[in-house]
Image: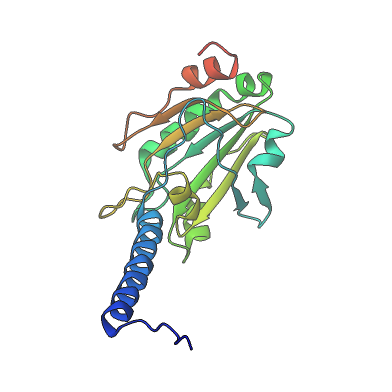
Length: 200
């Protein structure tokens, strides 16, 4: 008569340790992926989809805009405790070139990031007195979800996002990218227009 083969206590312990080790390694890999900052879209990359709301609650998505036109995506500093004067100058410069941007059949999406609480109030304060052309859209990014998805979170005291500009063609491909790791050094309207007109 054959007898059932049973594992020794030492073998059972080894199997248990192996199972626990595999589980810990898998969990560590998941955590490492979650803690890895998102990659900033580079020229030639497919721009990640986003859907953000304007101050009236209307949803603005990249895919819907791209169906009709190229998109100039401008990430502002939002509200780091004050209204950024360099952001105001940047927006003013873009508005001044609105007709040229319109000739390129492009839309401009300006993103105002920050903590969700009172973000719409601060955004309304920032945009007050700035008459936006029809092809300019102004949206908010509550709690930095978009900013983090694009790898642009400036995680330091009194900071919000790295000021950034992307030109995205109708296929959703990034054709121009300018990331500033300081408050200044913003994309110039002339460079944006060159990218829109295929000269970059």
